[in-house]
Image (cartoon, rainbow, N blue to C red; front, side):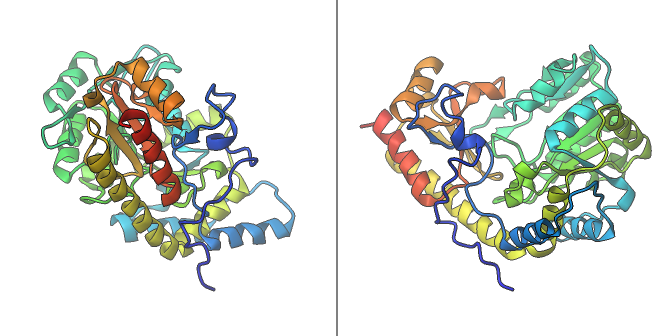
Length: 393
């Protein structure tokens, strides 16, 4: 059987499907004719092998309590070994309904109310939400944009805050959303050594690990043996195969005590088995989805290159931050010279675009916008043309 869903130029109508990206424009206060490139899912049909596996499971007609077996684990293990040179063990795996849920469970498992949790803003905004909503203090080791048009870590500030704020938990975003960094081995080891030194647990959100265009993704727990004792590694097929609506993630916790505490919080939240469709889709994707994945990755890379060239040629005053990973592009509008309110108004009401404003990602995000590049080239060009008309013409 051949892969059928390789036409990424195909525009699939998502309206009328309960799609968060398209169907809730009015509820979110956006103009009805806005073009959405915000939420991080893709406009592509997933692998036909995944569709076929789900269809076969549907035909069975019974959807009772379901648990994954050895075949599921072998599919996940194979993907991690092939793509990330990481040999996982069966007892490390904890399945959760999404990575954000796992982040919340980690905050509850490894800190107490009032404790400080460290993140690196500007960063995926649920990081701050799960910290604050659970009554913990949010501390940011804010990234800075260097002369090389890449973001960097202030390591002195990182260690100082570990000590001064008595940090117990650090949430790492790797690859980083939204700034597009693929952290090097040296950068991650420097962070890891400081966390081991100061007895800090590291939750590493690696959901974008399969989208690397420069460098190589390094699984945090796999860098040094001692990191296994402080690591919670969060992965999912949802970004890679466009399965976010099936709500499942694979979390790896090598240390038995950390795993026990994490499972304890899941028990307290009433979570046991996940949905059968998420499990079915994940196994099929990791077992049979390689051809689709490679073709999709090339298309997204070409889209990102297209944005880069378009911005350089058509949008003076706008700069695309050097992009290494994820399918989320970080655009710097500060050269336009507009205040945040005016910038947002022009994007939404003149360009008629629904992007993610940089301010929602926290410190350092003002003047930036996040653009989702995982759509057809036709839609992407229309969005950029709208941007050009609003800001330049």
